[in-house]
Image (cartoon, rainbow, N blue to C red):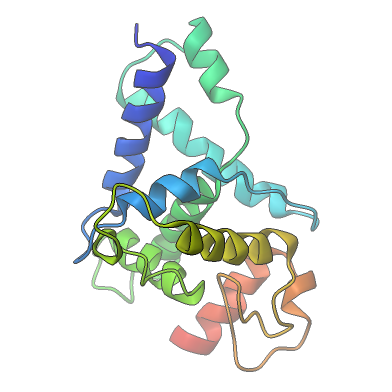
Length: 189
């Protein structure tokens, strides 16, 4: 059986491969996103967290791991990370727009669009020649993520995963699913 660290590392690489066919590498940023827990407080946003946590079960199935093993069961109990949440949303967006995108898997395209919406796409691995980003970049990334988590972004969703130009309700008080639907309608409807 895998050691816990090896399991987490293997899982991270598996997740990254779900979105990894970008023109640019985002492993450093993805690592930061994967260390940050998504906290929800708007009703039904727990469903999006469950979508993210479901990825762990897919990984366990795909790698034929025993869920009853102590290390695996511990691994399954953690909170949903922002990276898992964003991948799950990218997969949902892919499923919802399947007919529009010539029946291609566009999960990586959607993930990159979510990074752009958060103003994080510039933090590719090329952004820094160091193993990690510098302290200023880390602070900026963390601030962007805290705005997302705390929902202190604009009522039109600016600063969130799903900004829109016209909204009927305050996006900072709207569950993620309906934010996503409004975004799709405005940009792809």
